[in-house]
Image 1 (cartoon, rainbow, N blue to C red):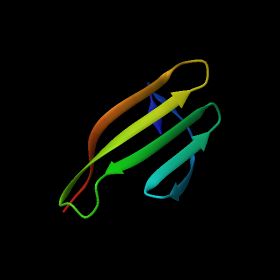
Image 2 (cartoon, rainbow, N blue to C red):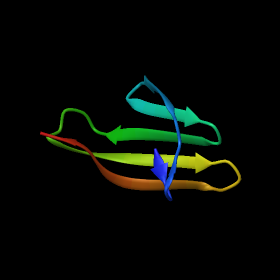
Image 3 (spheres, rainbow, N blue to C red):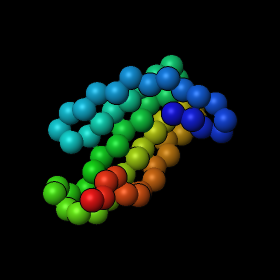
Length: 63
């Protein structure tokens, strides 16, 4: 993950539709909204150690 010009190495795991990734001082999760739709919305939430949690909505996949 690249954030403000800094690269973070993350290890990802997928469980019950949510993909979670963790690294040194950072954690992120992508949760799709709905199943099998042509255009899928998703929520990205990440937390940086010493800062708050931030969330974004966007597209996860399209066909």
